[in-house]
Image 1 (cartoon, rainbow, N blue to C red):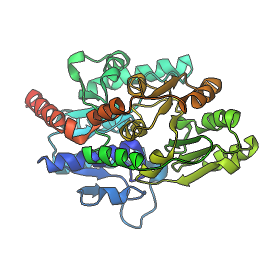
Image 2 (cartoon, one colour):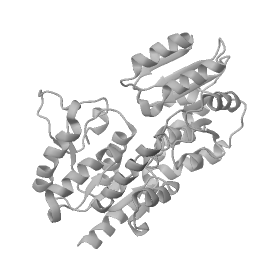
Image 3 (cartoon, rainbow, N blue to C red):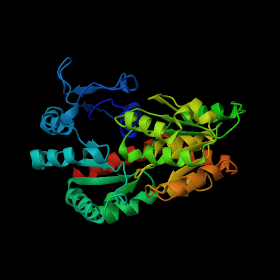
Image 4 (cartoon, rainbow, N blue to C red):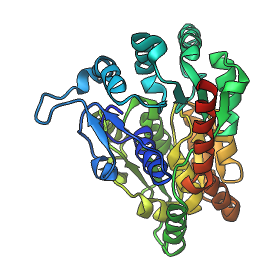
Length: 365
């Protein structure tokens, strides 16, 4: 893991390892640098920190830093399995395999983001697919975060289907799902106007600029939009809100955890991303019983949003704004939404992970 900088992948790493450790798996997290807002969530977990305290930050070259130092940690600790938690670490995994050769432990890769990348121009999509196929032999098993993504992995990576497994992403615990539901059920929403919430890093992938444009098309004096998250695009988004004339109806409180009050008070969650693997915040919205408007930004989104909201094409401002109007009068099946969210919990998935680890060790013994 590069750092504690907040993101869905980083939250997953911490959550998974805490659950695996509680189930008796001996773990070590190789951490590039000890910086970031998620540090408190990782308290009590064992780390090998690659950056010396007080040293200059490696944020600008964190992947190269990990490639340089991870082989030494693997040689020192001699793990049975290396877990590659997401797409942004595949370069590190490939480099590790090249460095260690036959001495490299089996690597399990969880695909954390969309592989088809329909947001890219055709030549870039082709190159992206070739990279996926080149790296495929490095991984003994590849994990899809929900069943619809499995077919995409097999196609894009050219994987043997026997090496691709589905384990629904453990986005929460059962206690988390209950807490989110209770927060929404006990919140009185009496404000006038329509109130939307979006959650995520302020980065290009999330395309919050599209959301601002869509909101500006429909916003009345009493409507509001809250974007919870932090990132490099903050200043650009603030300038865009001013230019669109909606700065007085936009709130950007930064990175906040938990987000229960925002999901409890909003009329809808809006996901405007260009690409996503799953969209953890959508699972959290399902648990709360909050309707969702989402772009069709990954293989799992249609399954998640079914009977829970509205799905629109990526980068379609008109379709997004129309869905945002319609969603506030929809009557989603809240019971079905909450039941679906429970499939994406630690309790529902922990044994599948343990079975996968046992399978990998039996194959590679």
